Image (cartoon, rainbow, N blue to C red; front, side, top):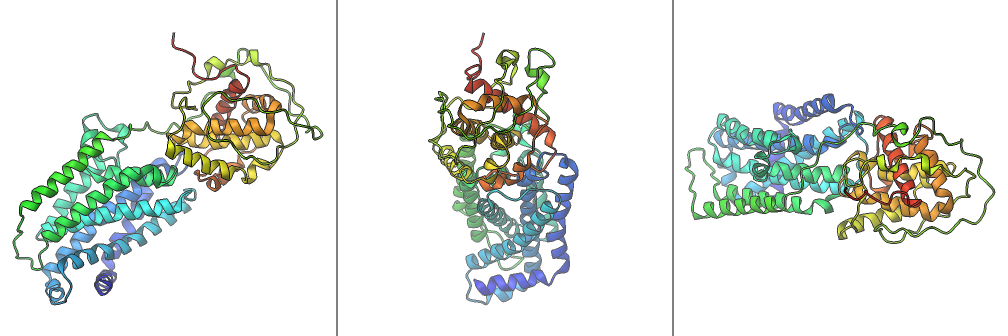
Length: 487
């Protein structure tokens, strides 16, 4: 196996045109995504699943099968047939050699994306796992294409028949939210949808644990394609394909995978809402309502005990030592129109009404442990510390990291109440009514908590911080504990 992989690598590396196609085209795809989505709150990060999948799909649909057919037509495989390697070892070696070349292309693409503003990966191990699984799945599919077709023009024809549908109705180039209803069940037949979800969950989500089902589907598609490629393999270009009963069994297993994917399909996410969420005047009852600027911190004193939170909460938090209280006047709660805030069940500034499941509880517990030693939580005055902690809820909300985004506000609320006690309403009012004040530098340190950093314009993010300050102010004072009952 090692010698076969080395021979295939050398054969490809000695072909400059193959390297140009394999390593230049991913940069062209990346440049296209950057030109379209350069104004996103996180440049390129929200579409990493798409451009990484396109790179993998291009190598699988065209690069590997073209190499296979060209070598077979040139008679090179007659020499391989004289070696002790069986055909399954040879096919696997072809896939693994191309996977190593594809890894170089993905590294190059990621490096270029970082230069264009994409933030660091919050879950590098999960991202690598998702990329490896997706790459092997599609390369096994490419090995099947190379086995089926007889010449290079046929590779281009069959490759386009797979490449284009995945791009258009498979959720790879066109977001699922933009597809008509009839296309969503069809997309479950194609592994491109699952690759995008798995990679995107690793890049801007909570890691591949939340995309375990998609990874399992990719592994199933890859295994079926590899099995078919080995059973249909031929050393000579003139040999005829000899399908048998097993072909129907593989097709039935593939349809079963598609049916399972359809039965457990996730709700199609809406496009990320990157606009600023209102202004202060939208949430006050009269124009000109203001809070005096924060006074200097008062001498250290005993903090008031935290009030009991009635909303469903994650496990108890072990927070750092509470800062000294600040002398701020009590906010005029009657002047704030809490009923005008976006609903907790909506897309903007959501807050969960149900407890987290086991996977979410594990992710929240990990973030909880890391917040205890997070530097921004202890930097600056109390107002700045509250503002930095609100970013833990604001950034995932801006990126629509569902379902994590709906549970983080409760985690932040519990931490704030435990640290600031009776001073918290005044601190939240200061931030809500003055959203343009203070620093958002902590947004670049969110990867330490396993969350994506925010590198885009500050306006939309300040709007989310303002909304969560208003919402948590309503919760800690009992003025707004959740969505109002329907009329």
